[in-house]
Image (cartoon, rainbow, N blue to C red; front, side):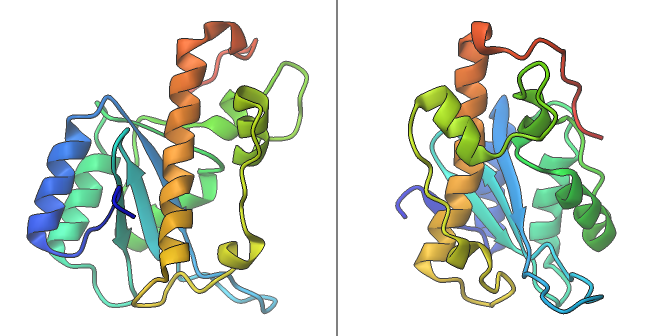
Length: 192
């Protein structure tokens, strides 16, 4: 928890922006309250996670209008062409951010497809990538994954889970770039 910041105030947003803007690459993910009923539309994302090598910044996006300082932070970081954002399975996240906040994310690499080996058809998840690159097991609790991310106050387990998602993506990306022999055979383009 010492390496996680819940960004809620304009002052916290300014500090987060300074740290994130100074990074060459950041881990990125979102969380949404799950939908269980057939035809139920998601109102997500409800949480945006942005991680530097040292700190994970979490921004809650509720049903009420997002405070301007938080919206400006997300827009500045996510629309920046100079900050590379990396994460897993980001297609839906990008569409939802555009729909909910009008943010057109730029300079994004979806590691789900980028880290696939030649001939693999399925996308690669964070658990499989951690096993492949670090020979370790990444624990991702289904119980936490399916919790209500729209709650005004998240539990410590939710906060740590969310921070880990963004941080794991960044660590995997850095490891992959530092060990080019593990690069996929086909070049990967940034996600739209």
